[in-house]
Image 1 (tube, rainbow, N blue to C red):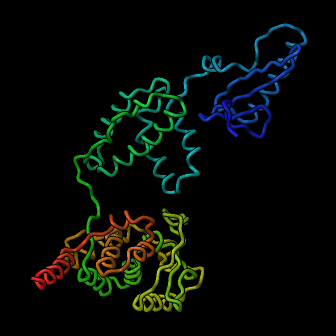
Image 2 (cartoon, one colour):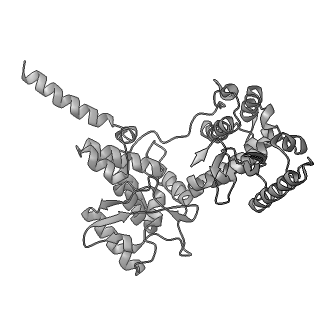
Image 3 (tube, one colour):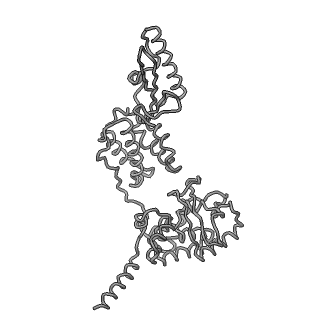
Length: 395
């Protein structure tokens, strides 16, 4: 249980504070009462040295009581530690923060956050002592981020700058609490802006466009047809598709069990850490059955593997879809996310219940399903035509 001293450890009289620092306590009898002495040690102190320091402090206190002579303690007080050691910098805190947060982050999140911190945060703020950090420093960082350019000389995209700010904001929020800094450190500080527009999938294909895209794949890129067809009709995320093994596919029962995802070659849980079952259409069953026969798959084998037998690259898939979308005469830039939007939109326009669509795509909230809905004008016209027929029929 946590106390004012911090969280009790497995060692007697040793506590761990919220900011990572150690606190040691020694209680000795003195006259008719007791004397309690506490010392705070830096978070960087090895645990073995902390335990040894407490033992040394007890010996020194017992010696003082026996002799009545006050001597300089070998284990300094918190104020002495602050004088003897250099100030904790943002870089020092960042190192401890990453260690503390790693277990809560997905593998890709760890990679992305560490990269942002090392190349986009610490070069600007790392050497500043935590106690001296001001809002002006954060504003200076914002201006610096907006001034950064890619190798091609372009400003970074909004999404990239937003990622940098999200990581820094998370670091600062915890730093404010752990070191009892003023909340004004980030008060009304807005994310850095970019003059570049967002490159984001904002539309869904019509049934005709999806058919044209699949026809291009079938005739010109047949080897990719089974996985794009499965991706488009299942609504799966690419990472989920490429983590599938044949033991996840039951052609007889007509279903796929989605319980894992692959990111940067590492297999883990799905994005929402839930397992779901996706029903196969007759066409999906036939396509996967033919693919299974051609690959002579085994239960542990990947359903869609690279030429070397490893996991496919989502980047390669993205390039392929962009190319095939252009060949199919589709104005929208086609990518894996567009196929997710398309599955969500076409199912909803067909009148499929919200719960079924969410269950198929792996959405946990209604709001996410609504965000993925990119209604077609043709569906709106069909709906308003029905409304007009009802209204006019009643006149």
